[in-house]
Length: 167
View (cartoon, rainbow, N blue to C red):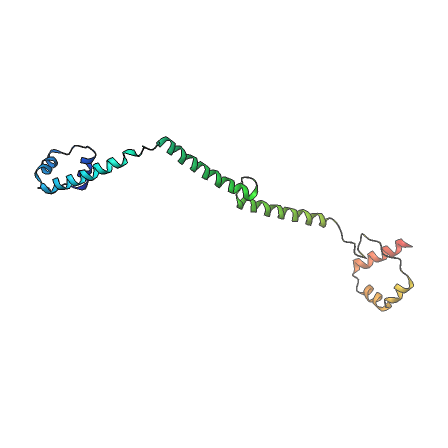
């Protein structure tokens, strides 16, 4: 034959599900399966009498409590992101914005200072002090002539035009 009843068959009997005819006839004929069924049935009735005082849980309340906990967890994650910056923005975006701000400020400062010329004595935007005897005597005469000799043709013409216009 097919053998003794399996555990799932005994569970079906406990739950009140009717067994097929061949299993039912085996249970009536087999003393081993009858003994197993009697012991399982007695344990089942004892356990059934124990939980008679335990009320059935309210499943709608359980579902709503689970839903509330899941929503509170999602809100906590969202506020954790808001705590870092004060508004809903990701940390990578905050770093990118701060880097952009630093680069922009640096560019503005560099461009602002590029328009200004430094006040270096002798540069085109500043006036030279009046020459005095002390300043003329401090420079050797030979250095002046060496500088004049090293001037190119265009520079010599410009120097002559400057000197002739001052007369």
